[in-house]
Image (cartoon, rainbow, N blue to C red; front, side):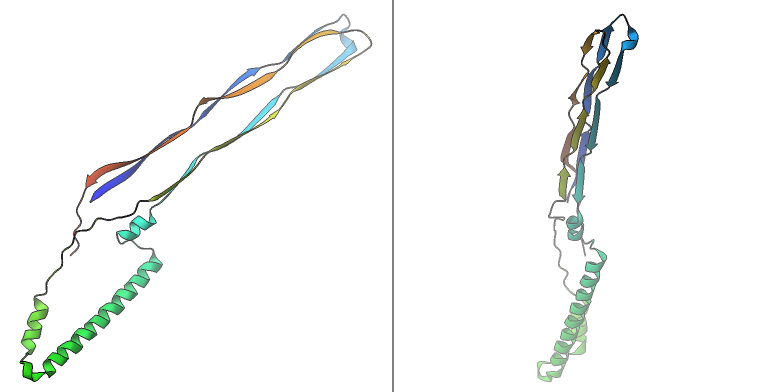
Length: 191
């Protein structure tokens, strides 16, 4: 039986930020005649990781590992069928012994039960693949720009303002690589 294993490789993405701080250069002779209120820009990001769900329950059931509820139902059905088959077999044997004219004896019936023919078969399990479901990662940004408020008195003020900026870029892409790899062979024989 061919055995496979699932080889999953993944890498996280990486964000890069170019931050240019703002600046205000002020020229005045009277320093107490103005008020500057400065707020820096803010950047919030939320990221969720990719999710991979592997459901191999069908594969396990195909090789005989059932959930407890199904296992109980299967045992009940097997026991019921075995009991009915045994009763039918004994009724047929009784009918055979009752037909005296055919000349069947008890030792003939006992001999037929001792040397029964066995049936040998080869099968490959599991027949179905595991169910693999992947959900992508999510990344969201919340940007709040900064501002500069300048309150100037009656005297003229000269100032130069360089705006602050934040530029986000994807420095490294996230990835998921899923491979199914053959890992060996094995033969199971059920007797």
